[in-house]
Length: 132
Image (cartoon, rainbow, N blue to C red; front, side):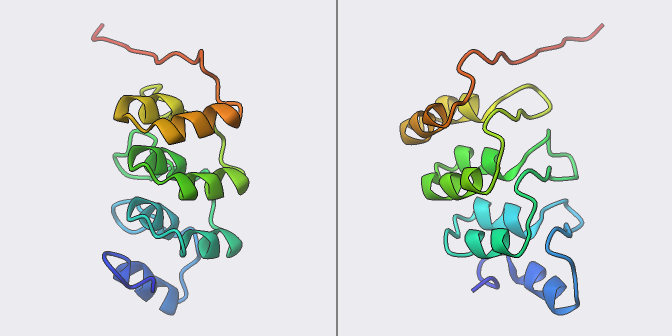
C-alpha cells in the first residue's frame, strides 16, 4: 500500500531499516507524504508505529507540519487522526500562518469548524516582516 504514488522511496527506506521519522533528501517523512496524498488508511499505521505528529518538514518548508498539509488539502479525516494523536491545533508555520488560517484561506469549511471545535485560537495573528 505504501508504495503507491510517491511512497516507493519511503518503502525502500523501511526495507533498508530506516526509522519511522527519517526524512527523504527533500525533508519529507513518511507521515508527511501519506498526509499530502490523502492516504487515510496509512496515516493511522504510521502514527501507531511512532511517527512524530508535530515533526516539521526539514528542507525549505516554511515550517510545514502534517496538520498544515491536511488543512491545505482538505483531508478532514486525516486532520482528525492527527489531532487525536496529539497534533497541536495552534502551531504555526514560520510566517505565522496557523492551521485555522490555512483552512480558512483555502475555503475548507469543514476543517475550519473542526479546528475551532478542537479549541484552535481564532484570534491568532500572522506576523509579517518587511525588509529592514
